Length: 230
Image 1 (tube, rainbow, N blue to C red):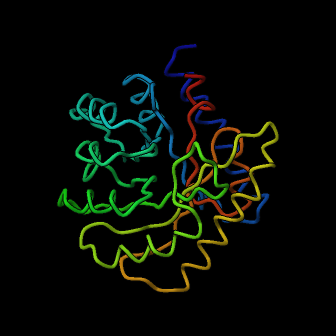
Image 2 (image 1 turned 135 degrees about the horizontal axis):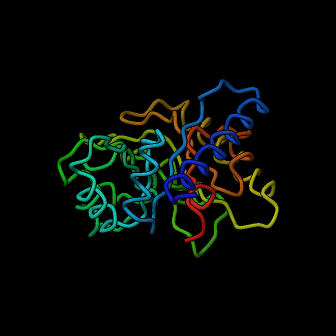
Image 3 (image 1 turned 180 degrees about the vertical axis):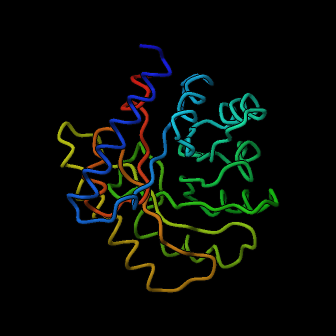
């Protein structure tokens, strides 16, 4: 089997898992969007995903995003890029205005850096629900203040929340953290802030997408289950 066929088969398996999880949760078919994470994969892998009908692609490093965008710029099929990794203010130039959605905003400083780029940009706020010291993300208690900051912006808007749960051997162990993010979203959505619409929940990866969908994920970020180990 060719590499392109491998990627297509991986996508098919993941799509089937998503459809089954939607049905099990009583959710409408197609209510969860797949972001295929091409981080550390080749340009040809990205092309194979596009050829298999997967337009939403995710990257985690600014320069790698830039390089893949340039390599694919002349292709007939263009991706909808997502930036899903930690973003530093000095790497904003590679990302702002070049992606459909940034999943990992976690500070007012980063928001201000995005605003200064002068491009319309949708983003998600990353929340460190479990309070893990080694992970990025705003603390749940600090989320309201960060969401308030959007009111003073004119180009950057919040489309929802994202989280990365603690690693665990049992995928079901992630479910309380996904539920906590949904509860945060529901609470903050009631406040009606300017430039904040909390429709998206980005949560769930290869090992725990079913648990995330059961708790309301609208975006799942899948790499290994499609492309194999990095």
